[in-house]
Image (cartoon, rainbow, N blue to C red; front, side, top):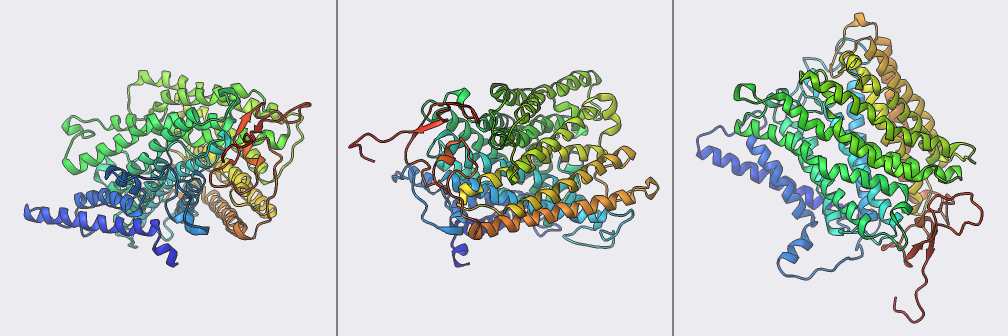
Length: 631
């Protein structure tokens, strides 16, 4: 505990609080001198909270020490290019590190924490929906300045965005940990920027969660005006948190692209890179070029609220539909930011457990770029019911359906890889297979939403909720768990318990099928999304009860995972040698990896996925140092 209070995390959180209160107090003092109001329901006024949140973020970054090297450099003080961590054990992960492996684990742990919080919010409002009429979120209750229905709106809205931010952090965790190892690099291209990208996400998460305590908001995760222009001050914390988190995504993506271009091992041409690296490239291209749009859309609503600007106010010449264009120009490509790394994990792990070459490697690599490209021209299928110009509907319908082509390439490759393979099913492979099936269900339920005639009926029903959960769970959550079970031994030197891992899978998977099929069913009957109550005449009380039970079963499976994860760090079976009999370079050296990854550089001499072939010399060859050479 003593180590925590002196850690970078504790210092950062302390200074974020100080910066927020001092800045908000300063704004309050200035407003008092100007004769303006100095308080509202939550002590400070909205401008004070917004400036306080922004300045608090800067205080966090300086207080945590992640900017120390840059400040020293600006003062003319020499800083080392790279350094070993001065901390051991758990303290390593609550302090600033430049090691990409530590940063990857930091991202992953925060992602798991946010998934837990977002999942808890879902269990609360799902329990309320277990029967018609209000159960415990009643109009008479008051919590955080909100009555029951208002709190429902906040929890439902925060569930969506917290899960999205957790997915983005989970993606960064996998990419940060695995990509340099797969490339043969000692670290990311810009280690300090890499650390900064992680640490700026922490105050962003704090800002996002603070919206719950500042009146909440009732817009859903999309933040559409005019609702978002009238919501309590919690809406501004939501906007500011997402805006700050966007910097993590943009800077991290830049770092990944430079790392891939500049730090590949000798002989690793583009078509000999591990397939997961191609997924990371496509993901980074989207995140680096599109994230600005959600930042712009949220920032413009912030400014409209603070300064009276009329971006989305028709009375001042604004247009609320403009927000939707800006928002979805990022937020639909963002779906591929979520799923492309997951699909990359599936393609990376599948040949290992099938013992066959990956079928159509080049096609899979190019399909990731194809999905990224087409993903930029499909955003308006979210707006078929928005009142946008009707002549735009058909082009966006066709472009949306076109995404099925590069996605289908991946499915055909996976099926061909599985065909007649010597399949083994340890826990990582179970989650790979589960991801393929669940993502297929998400893909098959997608065309009705992409087709104008059917989307007009399905839009904003629970059918959309079921489709989206299938897509995200199959495209990210299942592969995320597969990646954790697969690389956990490499990170810790110990294996996670196989029995508990399989129990996690077999409890979560059928429960998830019940949940999403049930969502689609009640959506087809007429259940709207984002509402706290529903008409008993619909006759879906029983279905909602089953959905709630399935949700709690999924939560129980995740609790089993958490126990397995943290217990295995110290008590897991030791992982020795090439645990999965993989050709990948990181499994050719002992676990866990040393600080600078590979003590000997390697050269790529073969293909990455030539499993089961005769006369195969392997994928990489480690280069022995010349005699007499200095280490």
